[in-house]
Amino acid sequence: MYKAFGKRIFDFSMALIGFILLFPLFIILAIGLWITLKGNPFFTQSRPGKNEETFFIIKFRTMSNERDEKGELLPDNQRLTKIGAFIRRFSLDELPQLLNVIKGDMSLIGPRPLIVKYLPYYKESERIRHSVRPGITGLAQVSGRNNLNWDQKLQYDINYVKNLSFLLDAKILFLTIKKVFKTDDVVIAPIGTLIDLDEYRKNKSKK
Image (cartoon, rainbow, N blue to C red; front, top):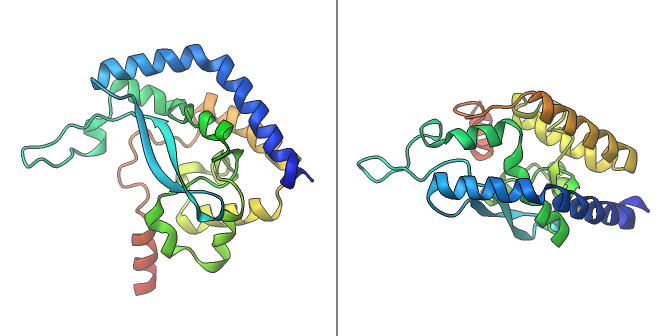
């Protein structure tokens, strides 16, 4: 019952209330980023959602588009702005995703929506992660966040879908809030912490 109906009602109501309460902060961050980045403060990207149907995720931009003399983007740690580092530290870059939840593209809790190019590299058992709406936060994020390898992250996604319940969602939401304020396992400028899933799987297949 919760998975079929209650979860969407919970998502919509909580996301709407959260967005209304946090709207002043939303505006302040948007203006601060617009001034700092000299342009659009939002980052959008196509991501696979439920049933692998793509949607556009929306986040706050935390990096500039500065390039080197060859016209190539500078490394992430050189493009990360001071306000961007602050926003990442407290996971405020995820705030605009409340709009994705209200719209119905995402859930508050669920497997994180990864990039489209990873789709061919999931194991068959891992594709279950796309049987539910992706989430702003999930079981993997409160179980190690950036300190997990890909196999561990995706196994947590499998476990979440198989054990989905209101109590599990409530537990993950509580742990997420706790981690945000403690900034546990947060990598501000994730350089070399986790290679792309496609490279990870290709490297493992060579061993």
